[in-house]
Image 1 (cartoon, rainbow, N blue to C red):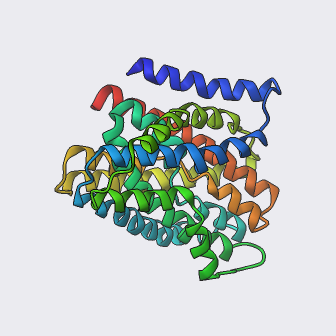
Image 2 (cartoon, one colour):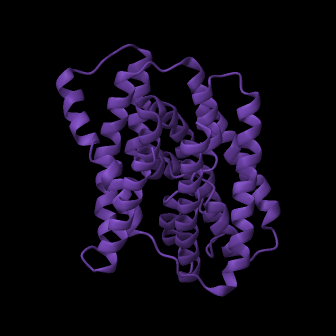
Length: 302
């Protein structure tokens, strides 16, 4: 397992090195991310859901994530009530989780296809948190104020290829309908690119520049996010009446990095450059923290 983590760190470091040497640039990450979210990740989802049996209890996972997202938003409004409007919006936009890009490569290295099934269902709930709760709050606290358009939010959900793939793959699985072998074999070949591409992308986006004025609020956010995640994660781990993989998914899932989409929302809502830089920095720091958490789980707990 240590060797698997070493490979993961090397690929992330390679992405960062390629950026530092100007062989690749951050803007190249936009193309790579499109390939991941529109091609390799959906292919991986199809292969995963085709080869495993989804238990009925897994339907509860997206519900748990959605409820947790609502609780986080309500508590976040209280915790950050004294922060400046845009800073408050920046923190509340970071309520989602980076599952498809960050967790999938590491989860596959630790638990294989079974782990991907559980975290895929977790990601379904994450999609609703990100494109629903985080999007609404980010819009509300922007300079222009709330631009809540339910139809637009539904369109965003409908245009999320990973989410639609999750839903379709789940329906096929529950209906005991299998895709032709040719389709699965092609998807399997494509899905193998998901892990290296995702890790390279993480390396490309690594950046730790931060204005000193944001250090204290950032530490407050990290304490809130991981403190709440640990509290609910361990509580659910102890009391959920399901198997260990199910409970590990909830515990680890609530400690994953912030959703990468927050940066996209910040640009869309015309947040200041300092706020977008803060969001990017927090995203990178939570990636490092979550890598450490998964490493500890893989080597000292499992």
